[in-house]
Image (cartoon, rainbow, N blue to C red; front, side, top):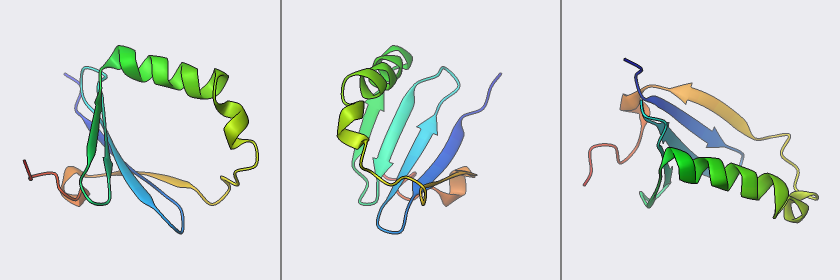
Length: 82
């Protein structure tokens, strides 16, 4: 059985948290606790869409200071809130 994985993705201005559950579904959580739930298939479509449809919008974005860290469940804000 695979365990869920938790990630903190941040730069100097913003932080988002990502949970990838054992079935491949993705939950994206912002700093104030708003959540976006994506099935494994929806996440696949989003990845494809970003890479192929709206990638031109990100050509001038400097992502060199973006960090991705795997974290523990306890480090997730809003994880116990409903």
